[in-house]
Length: 83
Length: 83
Length: 155
Length: 155
Image (cartoon, rainbow over all chains, first blue to last red; front, side, top):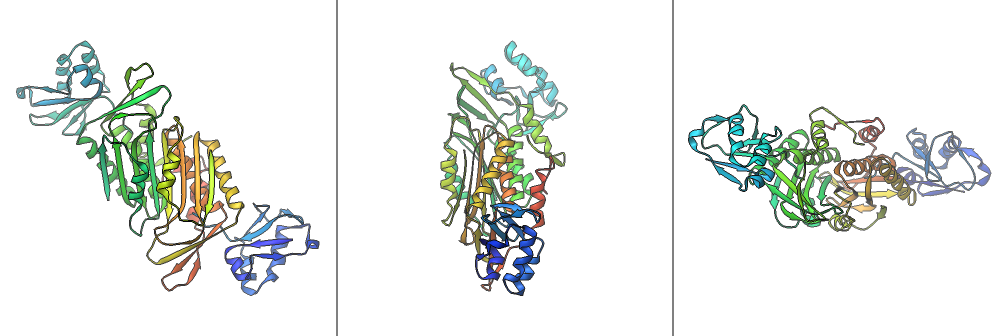
């Protein structure tokens, strides 16, 4: 299953998506956050640890308690700054 | 001295300005209102008696107590409905 | 820069926006309002104004807005004379570094203009008869919001 | 009619206003917002977005606005990619029978878009270095006004 990253997280990770083994699921947003810290370097880990980093599950912003199943579309990104 | 009228007052009076003898001044907005009721027909008198009719002295809306001198620019009109 | 114009010509909002938006580097937000004649039971409008006083009053409203919010530029164009359905009656534009000031200044001027600029409107009904439009209490209420310090959300 | 579009092309607000204003007889008011890149210490912007989710979120904001106020039509066009000073970043338009609804709906969508649509901005400084723009607390405060029932006047 792929997990998408945007903005500074994408930049720090050096890619806009990560393949994540399906046997990591079902999981929760909180668990994914913790696991993903080791997906990049220290700077990426620090960025992911920022409590302001948002998660979207199936294109809806989801808090830490939301459960994630294989097949869901999951993305992490910093606070939005459009407009 | 000329006094100007707009909108329904102009229409009821049949003209957009009235010549008013300079020896009627100095006066007040209240006195002018009263005198002008006889300047047209009964319908005009009724329209002028409407307390919502506004007066502008030198292009500023002026209440009844404001004094008017010969040479001032005076106008009467209903509530404004632009835009 | 504050600009007001009264015209009997048709108002081309698209062209006005092009000109108005072409400003300096400090502009981050442009808010515009166009009021246009509705159709249905009204077949035409006729707008009458007090030349000179209209421009002066609208100018004063824009100066008041510019003293309350940091606007870069404001513009009002108001049409008078015969106006048909879908044609534009009035255009108000405000620019600022940030959107809050532009929104507030534009709406403020429009709210004041409705009740405080010497313009009068009459409508022609489907029978061809003309009727003077009566001032609406709700327009006065909207204007008065601005002096109350708190702007109630419109519903 | 609610319409949203994300584009890498330059936004021509004048052309958008021409098309948007050409509507039915019930429209009495059109309010537009254009956000444009300021110059000065910023030499370029780059906008990144989450394709699909951006359109969905902005669509939801417009539907929410349309349920709160009687709007005739709304439109949002947001540019992404490289944007230079004076170029338009975002366009929001709202039409209604009366101005109050058009003003509120336009400002509501813009306030929600700033904090709730998955778009991210970075700026290039005069030295050529890029910096991610940080979310501003004031933008969250503006969004939250809409759920408080009372809209404080912006100062």
